[in-house]
Image (spheres, rainbow, N blue to C red):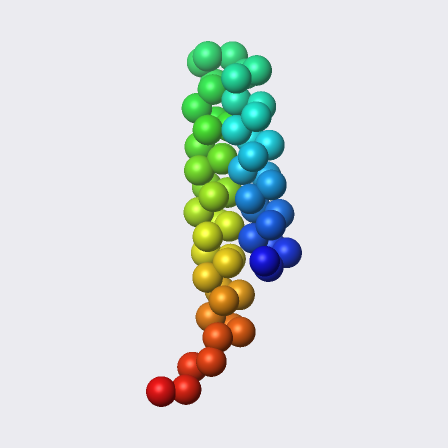
Length: 57
């Protein structure tokens, strides 16, 4: 796995873990950040995969 993708996945897990401990008024922030980090992890993984994948037709 790409190091960037691993970092973003770990950051998403941390944000999701912190979410229950936040106040209800601002709980949407760590949830939104977790979703954003998951998207970034997927995009980073796809970027690394496309760079290492053979593109010959």
